[in-house]
Image 1 (spheres, rainbow, N blue to C red):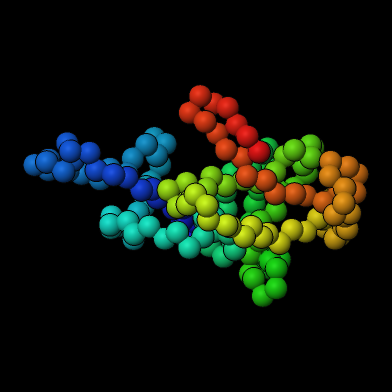
Image 2 (cartoon, rainbow, N blue to C red):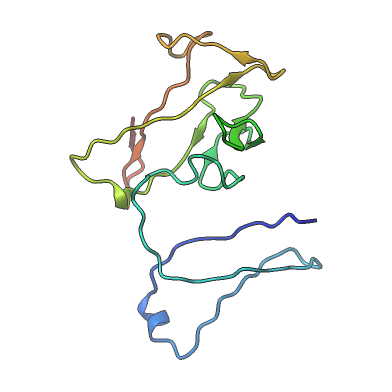
Length: 161
């Protein structure tokens, strides 16, 4: 099969790494008695791109990389994106209206006093796949439209919307 996963991250080297005589990259912890294949491995200096606080917002990676979701899980919708887009994300069988999709924003790129334009193409579908309409004047109701909010968390665990 051609099902490759991606492992990625960003780190700041601690002095112990900077001053090490030798250092190794380990890719490990696969289940016992399974084969582990790797390819296209790199460690390159990170250049911060603050042009968009959202990662993979157009879903054109063909994955849900960068996105978190409430249960049930979200998945890639192939061939069903907005306009000419090949991909979108769909979260099916949501038992609660509060179940949604989120992404941690890169707060290193947030500038005080800067205005940000937030946009998202949203589509409601029935369990059978038919497109549904909603009333943009209704929130938390039978015919209500989804809405977006920015939630912030403090180190003590509090949050605000």
